[in-house]
Image (tube, rainbow, N blue to C red; front, side, top):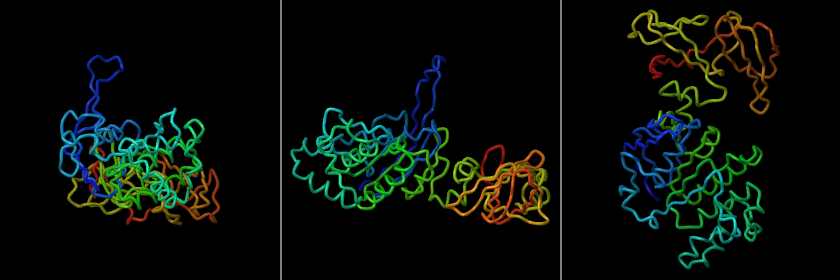
Length: 360
């Protein structure tokens, strides 16, 4: 298993938008370390730089500055055939004129080791609980999307693998199959124990597969940690708003005498060293807002029931503010009702609205 280190890597591209000479910074001075056998998810919205960073780690792109190292050896000093990298893309990238067996054993055939394939396929089938023998004599256009990705993953694992790089491999699959595909891949990663970097925009996928998650935004890594760390202790407003379903509630207010005060809510403790009247954004997740007889009134805009999670999400407004809270399913509430909300101070997060950095 390989340790992957990224040291202050930057990658720029010339923009193709009619603005001659304009440069886009896809990856901006990024550093991180992926430990042997770890699965790290690169998570973020489209255009945040996660795929470019993956391609830099793979050696498919060359950084403008900085270095990528495998086990402390610069990537450009390692011959391609010795890197031990397997890749799985959103588009399966299978050779269309080869049946699945030939796609999977390409690496082994080059090294005249075709005899190892049956044992490797048997191991993959045992781990996932899926028999892929019936796919081996089919061409890619005879396979479903899920079957093609199974073949792509088997191809990556059939080689002498040290690092597995995945670029949103399940993004094109329907919802019903994605959870099953994630489970299969999780089993394989647990058994094969390869260093894995997984690109996705889906936080549930990142949570299901990864040991740690790196949240990216505008070419930078905002924070790295477990899903729980990112959810409960975000270092900035970008992570706080991107992580979590439903999205965190945000309120604008001020620090006055060691208390936070906003338009509708207020009086909550905050750091005493903040200058009086400092603008502060308060964040609170919907599970930390509850009904209270003496709470803040709000008019119900929408009620969404989540039966499997056993709660209903209620969106309300008052004046210029909107917020959501989670209520038990047995609480009756309708559009247009007025309900009264109170905040649990234990769930409060505060951010500097100018920088987005968490301040307490």
